[in-house]
Image (cartoon, rainbow, N blue to C red; front, side):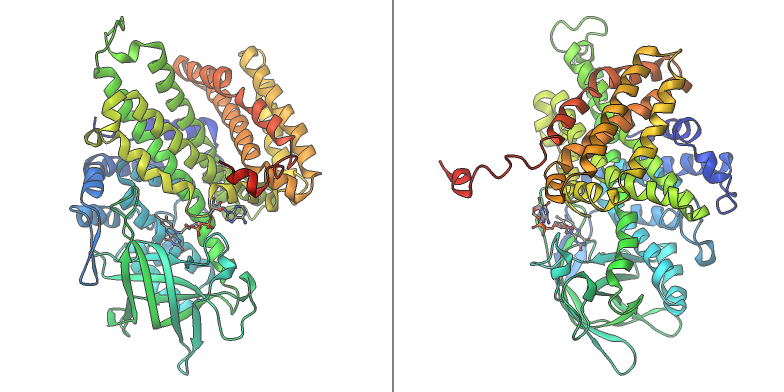
Length: 567
Ligand SMILES: Cc1cc2nc3c(=O)[nH]c(=O)nc-3n(C[C@H](O)[C@H](O)[C@H](O)COP(=O)(O)OP(=O)(O)OC[C@H]3O[C@@H](n4cnc5c(N)ncnc54)[C@H](O)[C@@H]3O)c2cc1C
């Protein structure tokens, strides 16, 4: 079945669930009128349906390859990229001063999600560039901004992020790449970076690498890291790509999925770089890029979940097997109906969480308010980890709905589950997202968490007359989560880390239920039915998760390494 962009669903979420009107009521985003937002979603959705979705299988069956040092991309990706760039979708939230549309991140999150549903491997390219644009907007000198931002925003040039080295993965502070100051004020960058997404391509004029490296004598760890712009072609005085820089793609990885996205080992051999932000301030600058990218990667998971759901539904409507009754298709079987409804309810919950995180980011940008800032920070790891967990779970269920055909590559069901797998790993593994949630994001003693729970409780109270059963279930879940949150913030870090993953998931479950309840209050019968399914059948998982949380680290190390290895 061809992909259909869920434009109506975004509009409903914007208007009735996540409150986009708060964002568009600010001076900063006043130009994003409802008509404009609708037009943007419709236009982006059309491109995803007509141009990007037909490329999805190409990326899988004709992976990017390295030929004589040049990366050749999958068939049709050049045209797909052109459509993204010409539509203005790279710079959708970027500063209008440099050619961006300046639209809220909430709208960008929806557009990025649609592109991810249609062709995840290609979508990763503009997602990386968007992160780079944001990092430059916040941290680069005026000169660098003037030179790079217009080209990145127009999509003529692409951006990458280079953190990882063989010995420095999750522990970015262990990186060793060097930056030697030169007489002309530039830096000579030397070192190897691995797993660099879209490290090169054959469709953009230039590829701009943001590289983390150490200055001579810099202290160890994250405090001694600086950030550098290292372009493939050094721009001349007119801003045109000129001399080739001393960097190259050494090899591309053979991966489980996401084959259309070239994942490169990069070698920098004294390449010319320009510092972005202050000396040893690289991590702070990179965090700007990573925060944006975390929400973006969560959106990748949700996009894949949507694509996998649409695929599975089309198959289930068509496939006849057994005494199904009704239409005679497998969609009539109770277990298939369960799987499909779970896929739909879960994808919707993750989408609502991601969009509410984006609203908090926009409100922070527009108002600088500390409460919004804390909310955005709290929701970011949840949006990333839950969105990508949902992508994995929903795409696996999609395979199951297809039966044996799910295991056969031609249907495309398996591709969703292979492609999305890495989203739980890159941009900070989901385990590390959860640790961030229970440590850094709870340094406020649980205030940001409590404020979210207050809203869910208020919604539950106002739904009490109309939807008493659902309202009560959501109310109780929010209060149980509050009690466990209060307990958790009083524990030692080691105990929190041991249960960070179930805690994050429980929080997402309760948030998802709160958003479903809000939708049920505002929506029609099908929305109520979807909310009922989620609240009655999926929300109860929170109780088991919170029971795990209460264990802390107790007993986790009781099995020795020898015990673990015992045959
Ligand atoms: C396809 C792909 C594309 C990528 N793109 C990019 C890119 O564009 N740019 C870039 O810089 N990097 C990129 N990466 C790298 C990616 O960000 C890292 O793989 C990721 O951060 C994990 O690092 P690692 O692979 O070294 O795993 P490790 O850090 O070795 O982790 C292994 C396991 O240990 C756990 N772990 C590690 N440390 C801790 C800890 N302190 N506490 C608890 N658990 C811990 C992890 O959660 C994980 O489960 C990409 C990776 C892939 C596979």
